[in-house]
Length: 199
Image 1 (cartoon, rainbow, N blue to C red):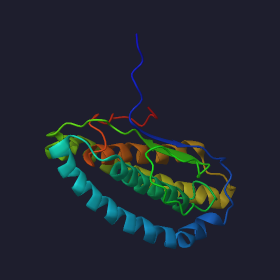
Image 2: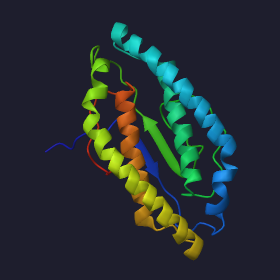
Image 3: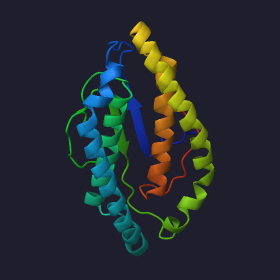
Image 4: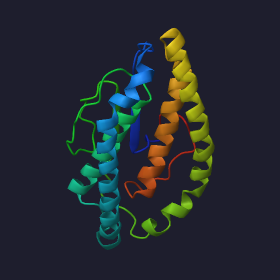
């Protein structure tokens, strides 16, 4: 039996469990410049997604340069948020290289979105509706993820270690949400799996 192909949106994260105990207290503060940039890039992504809506309707594809910039905004956001949630200690790079494939600048994570050569012309009209079950599941998972980050916060303060099970859960919830965002944001026509697994 043939194995199914991996989902076109992939997010991998690797890091040692050790985090300096003081980091949860200050990393969110150190990340403020990055968070400002993330906010600007998010606004840019919304504009580019609107443009993509029309390019898909008329041409059944997103121009590659446009796609690469959108992928970069997601990658930049993840690198910043993983730092804010003190999943690692390394300050995220100010890297704005538009690319669907991860450039490897961040040694902890890789976020890659496979470029589709063709998209369904009419799917942009209904994807938001088809994603409603995911939104419901992600609502509860997001609450659980926030609680997990709080537990991780105290675990690092007390032990200097981020519990790997909790960290992996937080990353998995983000991965699920990212795949839904990419689906609704027209980057793929492949329906996202109801799964916390990497594939």
